[in-house]
Length: 397
Image (tube, rainbow, N blue to C red; front, side):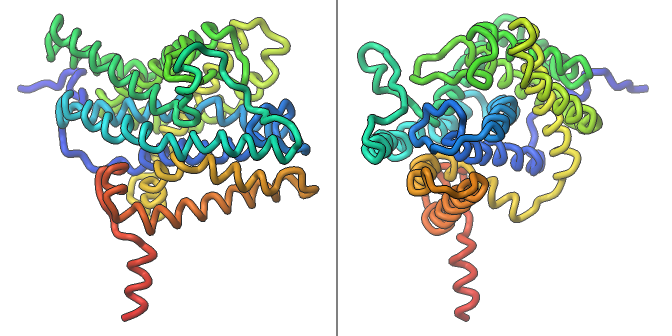
C-alpha cells in the first residue's frame, strides 16, 4: 500500500499551462500605475511635475488605496513566476532572463521614459512663470543624477532577484536540495493558511516602521539606485511570499476559497488605515496598513485564480501590452495633463481624457511597432501578430 505524504503537493519543475489569472493581475498592477500617476496632479499637497490648481481629497483617497497593494502584488507575482522559471530552466538561465528583460529595459528606456521628464518639468515651470515643482534629491556625486523615476521597481526587483538567488545557493549548499524543497513547500503551505496573512504582512510592517511609520501614502520607494531599508524589507517579503507560494501546488487554490472574506477584510482595514495615523500610535497604524495591503493582495490572488481560469483574448492582449505601456506612459501622460492643467473642467473629465489619450497612443504604438517586432520578443519573450495589421490585411482581401 502506498501513502501520500503532506509534502506531495510541493511544486515540481513542469510544463504547466499558462496561469491566465496571474497574467491578468500582473498587467493590472502595471496599468494601475498609469491610473495612479494620472491622479497625482490633483493631490491636495501638490509636489508633482505637473500640478493642477484644482485639487481633490478623493484623488488622495484613490492614490492611498492603490498604494496599499499595487507594488506588493507585483512583487508577489514576480517571486511566483521567478521560482517557476528557475525550477524549469535553472538559476543561470533565470538570471540571464531577468537581466535581459528587466535590467536592460531599465537602462535602455531611461532616456525617454525618465530623462524626458526633466524637460517636461522645465516646461511646466516656465508656463507658470515659476520653477518646476518636482524636488531634486540632495545626494552627493553621481547618485544625484542616477534617479530611476517610475522605473525604480525594475531596479528594486533586480536587487531582490540577486539576493534571493544568492541566498538560495547558500541554503542549497548547506542543507541540500531535498530539505530545501520540503522547507519551501511547508512555508508556502503556512502562507496559504489563514495565519499566512499576518505572517506575510510582517515585512510590510517592518518596512513602514523602518521609514518612520505610515507616511507619504505607504511604502516610500527609493529615489536612486541605492536601496532604502523600508522598501527593501517590504518588497523582499512580498517577493519571497510569491516564491514560497509557488512551492505548493495547492497554495493559490486555498487562497481562492477565501477571496470574498479577504476582500471584505481589505476594505474594512483600508478605511481604518485611512484614519489610523491621526488617532492611533505609529506601530498600530502601520500594522493596520500592512494587513490591509496584504488582504488586498491575497484576496485579488484568490479572485484571479478562481475566476480567470481560461484565456480571454482581450485580457491576454493587455497582459502582453502592459509592460510597454508602463515603461513609456509617464511622459505622454504628463504632456496631456500639462495641456489640461488649470482648465475649469470637472476633474473626472480631465482624468478620463488623460487616461484615454495616453492609453490609446500606447496601445497603438504597441500593436504597430512592438508586438510583432524584436521589441515584443525582448520585452515579452515572444513575438505576436499585430491585431491591427492582421485586420487590415483580412479586409483588403
